[in-house]
Image (cartoon, rainbow, N blue to C red):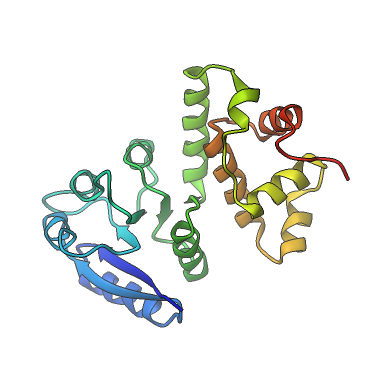
Length: 223
């Protein structure tokens, strides 16, 4: 099994060591490099390409946000999770605009942190807590600036099999709790899937997505 290769960027050595120990204790992931500053991250990430970069936002010198501009080039295959103490709207908005696939807070649990890494590595998005509210606002702003050519566009959106199944179950009126129980996962994970679906469709309402996919026939909502 190929392990998820991670790179850590944080100016606190004790914090990096703790995160590194947690990650390396897992059988499916490993830390292949680390940096104590944005400058060092830019230099080292020119020579290696991890699967997932865990980036702090506020650091002396070049911040995590500024470093990301140099690190995430158009042809980069690395995915990015911002791991921060702060849930400020300007930070979250900047992270999203830069193409981050995840934004989680440093007071999150180990389980959620590891789940975020696996989800992002698999091409999903992972945002939790107060960050989710900010993300929804971004959807609302996006909706104001996009056309409503929904039915034709909905057939071009590519969902994972799990996302299709969850969207269908939601369309059938199944609650988040029942869906979570069915798959043996948390309600928070179901909410994250909902956000992934909304982001892909560029919509701020799951009900709108259900309506357009039902009309287009791209997903079968029959029992």
